[in-house]
Each structure stands twice: as structure tokens, then as C-alpha cells.
Image 1 (cartoon, rainbow, N blue to C red):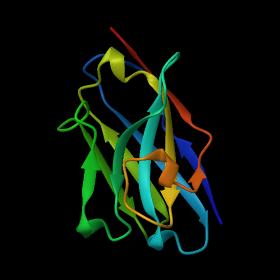
Image 2: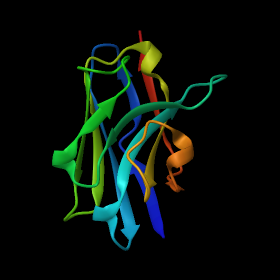
Image 3: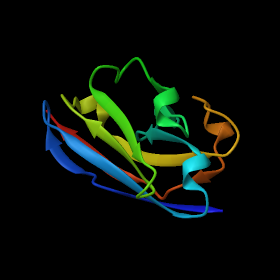
Image 4: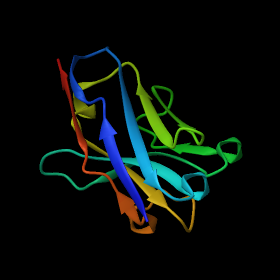
Length: 124
């Protein structure tokens, strides 16, 4: 069992930066693949970024955020972060972190545990 709590959301102007953090509690955090997803009003939740349990093994990003967002994890601190640069109004959404015990995936169905989400609003 893993509990996830996101923080770091807020209001930022277009072109600005935010850093989201997700703190995990429970056992064996280092064995979970971690992902970030987001959901804007009226839209389905979508994949943003993911990192394997062994961070050196790889990361994946949605095309819309590639080159602007960076996912990273600190297994010693049981945290995963999402550095978001050059933010755009279309990045506004509730951001969720998620953990998968099974596979490194862009599919939210593969994730077992979810945080409550943190709101990111980018003004134009």
C-alpha cells in the first residue's frame, strides 16, 4: 500500500515555472514506477510524465510537455517531482501523481495508487 500526497500547485503567469512534489508513504516506494497525470475541466485525465522505479532506466513524456517538463524521483526521500517550465495556459489542470507496481506505462489503468491532486492554473 502506498499513500501519495501532492503539493506545489498554484497560480503562475504564462512562461513561468512551478515544481510539483509528491510524497509517498508506505513500503517499497523504490519499487514503484511513478507517473504524473492531469485533468482539465471538461476533459479526460491525460498522461503527462512517468519514470521507472530505477530512474536511470528511463522516463517518458507526453508530446505536449516534452522539453518543458522534467520528472525526477528521490527514492531515499520517497518523493517524485515534476519541474514545469515555460508554462502555457493549456497546462492548467489538476495534476495527480500515481504509482504502479506492475509496469512502466502511459496508461492510467496501470496505476494502482493515486494522490488527491494539486491545482495548477496558468494565466495568459
